[in-house]
Length: 329
Image 1 (cartoon, rainbow, N blue to C red):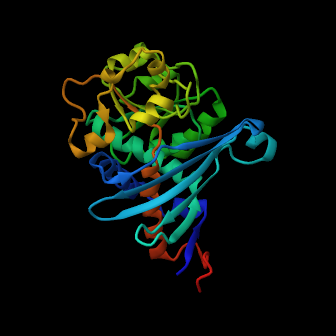
Image 2: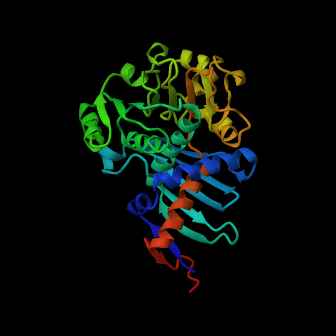
Image 3: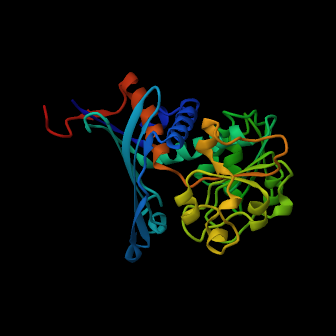
């Protein structure tokens, strides 16, 4: 029995968002039903190198399949300038739950991009107005591309407004999607006025004001992934329907972490988890909902679900490189 080695290109080629989005939705449902195990994300801080490692293991079981894996990922902000390497690198070990055999080792960076977009799509499907046609994006980095590709799986997006301080990044984004969408660069306020808004920035001081957000906008708050990061004005969170992916992670390092630590928000301000909405335990958008917010921190179950999609399709096509990792042959 051999282990499959899958590069970033292999991952992207075998992870159509049309399959990853429902797989991630199934993972959220399994988590809410108690059919998943996901220990808390652990950190190794490396101040000497201005970086950190994070380990993210999980197992989940759905009615159709089960899967297990571990993602080992980092954030090293100095990498691009000092070493010509990405800020985020990652490796996913995808294992057979029955035998523990390592079925695949795959690029975790590409997997992270895909599952993050898929999570936003799941939340958008349940929380955005049904006739949403406009998407605002704040931050034109790599994740902005996946946000549009994923969200357009669940809503008929026609118009896109992207806001970023870097005009070249806005132009590159527009050039990528101009054939399929009406893409324009704009201000944060113009992006926030869209039917759906995704914020994908690392800021530590809110940049989206309550006044800028339209009355029925759904917001995917993606950028906050560490304590102290905060993209949305507190008044948005206090007056919106707030849905989270995981209580421990969001209160520690999600969009709500700053107002939570300051006592501005508490349990009464959280309306449920996305998993509870998927299973029907908590309602998604209802008629009298105004602004809705999905606080996405990224869960290991999402990585495992996306890895399941990649592995199954790679096996069907014969992609990747197989090798005798354990020396059993």
